[in-house]
Amino acid sequence: MQPHTDATLHALAEEAVVYAYPLYEMCRMRAATSPQRTDAAGEAPKPLRWCNVFTHARQLLGAGKSRVVTPNNDTLYTNAWLDLGEGPLVIDVPDTAGRYYVLGLLDFFTNPFAHLGQRLTGTAARAFVVTPPGWRGTLPAAFDAPGARIEAPTRWLWIIGRLLVDGPQDVPAVNALQDGFLVRTLADWEAGRRSAPRAFDPACDPKAPLTAEHFAAQVNAALRDNAPPAGDAARLARYAALGIGADAGPLDDGQRAALQAALDTVLPRLREAQSGRTTASGWVQMPLVEGSFGDDHLARALIALKYIGMLESREATYPMAWHDAAGEPLTGQRRYTLRFAPDALPPVDAFWSLTMYDTRDYMLVDNPIDRYAIGDRTPGLRRDADGGLTLHIQHARPDGEAAFANWLPAPEGSFYLCLRAYVPRAELLDGRYQLPPLTVTKDSA
Image (cartoon, rainbow, N blue to C red; front, side):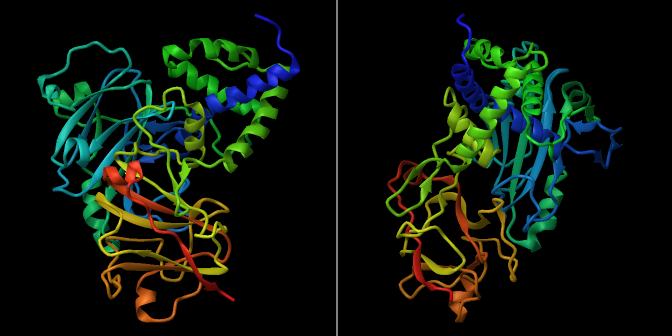
């Protein structure tokens, strides 16, 4: 192999950062979201955390209440980090009696490789077994049922579950369902007993500055625990020159400088990059995500940075609006309408909603009526005379009862919108259905 010049090392470092950023982000999110205590197991000895256990958000998210960017306000989240290092794990799910839910399973490279729930496995009570990579043991006959066995691509997995909530009054019913989601070892499942969670050391400060040393340490630890796809071997052999790899030691000065320069260059570039394609009406249609990103490492890194935990597109798609019909950035200094023509609401088989976010932090926007999203389950929406639906998007309270009923409050400054479409129909994914444009009605002044 030819020795690296400074220029080639820096180019390689930028490529490596794009490839490895999702691993870093998974380490960071595992440290930030795995529980320090559970009701059953109590407090984990510091600095340990618990895995192989579900934890639940018990209230709908409001402003400043999420650790995940672009969070939703339609569902309650259920979260679990699974370590398959000691063998298969069983996931028990309750009967949701037709209520929409999904458990999205991410491998440690952020591929959304499996989905459990209404769309694919129904809403009846059942058990699923998750087997480690390469596991060839014998399973009980109960797991011969279609969809009951899930082969994990990596040792560590992140499950992000979503259960539909029809407003604050529905929260207690969903809380009761959440308690029916369990993680058990295969032996405990066969014996009919609960499992204790497992303690582990995340070995990551999720708030630490993103230095080259911190990045390499997290990525290399992730690679030691989670074997990459066989096709990545040659790529990772090249990254060894940067101190990236399962067997890598401490960074030397040249590696540190190259990685730090790449982090300082690549991440701002990713933040500014557009994900997906812009439609004629100004909406950005998310790239179609399937069970694996394959070799599209740039798309994988973009989604890890901006939308980590994203479901595959057939489960949910998330068109985004950053600009109005004239191409101007959305701002609370203006007032907008979004009008759906009669019989032209977003085509979905589950539900849709429009959620407001502040561009400064990608989070929900605090507002005087505690409305963070508006959609097909919002009570009291007023239809237009012809049966259409006009939503009012602005900072100030609108005039008139109908406009107020259909108001999605905006911040004073810049914002963006996410149209969440759960179980979208084909026409929404292939572009035959076009969302209407955001039209400026007036400046707010």
